[in-house]
Image 1 (spheres, protein in one colour):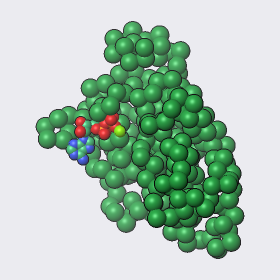
Image 2: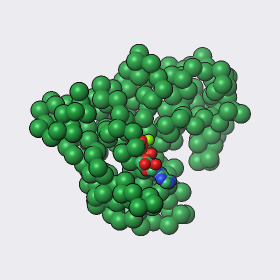
Image 3: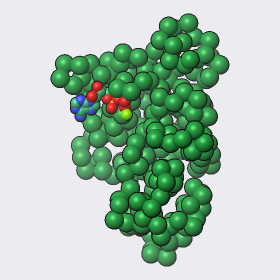
Image 4: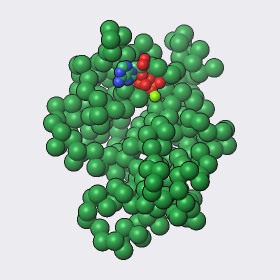
Length: 238
Ligand SMILES: Nc1ncnc2c1ncn2[C@@H]1O[C@H](COP(=O)(O)OP(=O)(O)O)[C@@H](O)[C@H]1O
Ligand SMILES: [Mg+2]
């Protein structure tokens, strides 16, 4: 479903990604882990063509993202749910209007259908009563859940979540991690989560990939990774 080969990206002579290979099977949830500044966001942005790599390729569901021009990319991105690190809700729209936004952009639903879909999504993220609130009135956890509802709104088969637990307390972090897992499995999404939060990575994902020095240092389910002899992985998982 997602196939990344030899992905490389440098900024001002600093090699951030240095030959990343990554495969995500249909319906699988993979956590990409690594400390801050290892290039997790750069990787995620490259997956949807918001950033161009220096070398390598990204293939998603048969779409050659890294070789595609803007008109094709815009169409492709409509089928990908992207949860930005800061939530990135529109402050001037209510929660319900935020979730409705990508549905209206699609233009295929009637206003009544949009309203019904928004209600359904808000219920899924346990925000049924909060549709009329503005983002400034919400807690950090609620903002994340609203942003997740918006990311999932078009019924995307690919879901990318950038640091879904950042800025949240441990309880909210656990909740959003389990919510992402539940919704992703329920909707049959192929999902990539980036995080430096080891505990919640394994709550959400089937498998984790650890980045180190621009490459994949190791990957696998929690038990396999914890058994790794790689010094960086051992240190990172502690
Ligand atoms: N647009 C950019 N211009 C210059 N440097 C960037 C840009 N985006 C990211 N970087 C650099 O790339 C590195 C990795 O960034 P990032 O992917 O945001 O890390 P992470 O998400 O793992 O914390 C950092 O050193 C960051 O400063
Ligand atoms: Mg980041």
